[in-house]
View 1 (tube, one colour):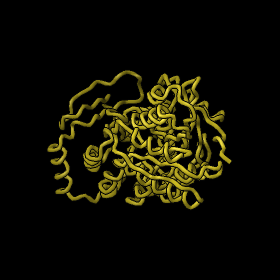
View 2 (view 1 turned 135 degrees about the horizontal axis):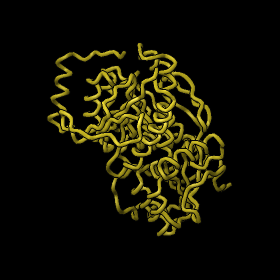
View 3 (view 1 turned 180 degrees about the vertical axis):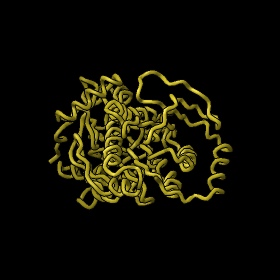
View 4 (view 1 turned 90 degrees about the vertical axis):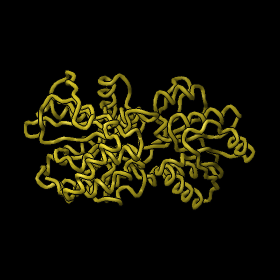
Length: 406
């Protein structure tokens, strides 16, 4: 089913590495999706917690993302979107009458955790493909191991341009960092913005690349932008805000996690910095909405908005909300789309030759509720969507334009 080029010695070394590095720290659960009852939990030989009803499906996905730490909200949403598809697929009969199984892995958004997970998957012939990881840093760490194993890795949210270049076995659901960075820069330029700041988490490789691409596009278009990185977890951005206020900037664009982005927004407004603020999808969640409550002119430039005015998309939103009690954030939609495309492609090509499945995934199209995606060498492309934080509702709403300075 899947090519294996690991030697016995290398595989054994990886297993020993897992034991030495505490591979059991990652959350791992497998569950039978033919029932809604909770599966019994048992301890595996390596110390991980595995939950299973004992069924063995022809298709088994590894769901990979952060389930603990600051980014747990994103991993949980991504898993929920994927499981929503898998549950519906199993209810319709599964694959040749056999339910699809999945196992969950918690990366903690940490490259070392991702490496250990990749090493484990590389020696597990029962896994058909991964859905995830969530971050570029983890994806790049996993890539060489996944490539050697010949295992399809269907990444959901990593936006680093190098990810799909690092292995022919990797596909990503999210648009390239270039798509979002260029789309954001173009929108600002078209609205007359000429002078601003791009702040990014310099511990995130995708964010670093996005900052470079934004700067390239914005300056090529005739604008001036100050690009600055900061360490994740920074608490005081007031020195930067003081400098930006004296420069009379027109916008702040940022790429960072929830807490960091919220601090930048609130500290900028506390200092009466009168400019447009643009955040990225990592900040679009209930926690962020609460942290920036009452702030004006905060926007998001991404490829998703939960209230995007499309009937088919709103049907997805309603189903997700009925299952999980909240509207899906972008990561939930990416997990949903990735699971759908994986299952559709396996249905078409079967499991006998996974290179055919891989090739079809890396180059092809997918009809989604938000439009047609074209995949070229593993990368998806789609137009950017802007949304604005609504002070009265306390949430972001899709908008067709941003304030013009022309």
